[in-house]
Length: 187
Image (cartoon, rainbow, N blue to C red; front, side, top):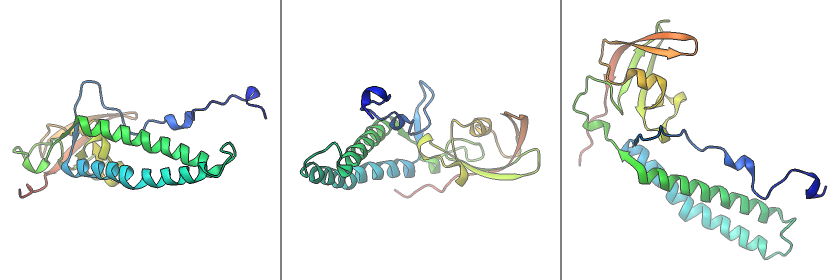
């Protein structure tokens, strides 16, 4: 079908999906040392391994002639855009990152960034979460972002405190059973 009759563009709109949770305006991008190292490793891998590999494939595919129906060329160009977009994102996030080592937290009985918290909700279900940066959050693994509603409710509370969590189903109360921090890393 002719492009004139179909709504198409040269840019892929599906590529415009946000890559991570946005930071609240004016807030800092707190991240643990492990999370920072992980983002740097991903950036280095994209820059030194993946991008050169895809560039080589695109170069080979371009040398084969007609690019309009060359699947390797078209897919390679799309993959290059994805890699470049991710590299820009990672570079920006690393530039504004504020590395916070939770092992150096002096108030170890209070919930701050990097704390691992064991709490019980009103239904009697116990959960353990670690409060981490936006870019390293994995809720299913118990690593929640410091800007998440649960983390916001827990921040600055102490063992034995009860905090209120506003949920779509209504208000919930969380009893803080334990607050832990990792041991300081030797320098």
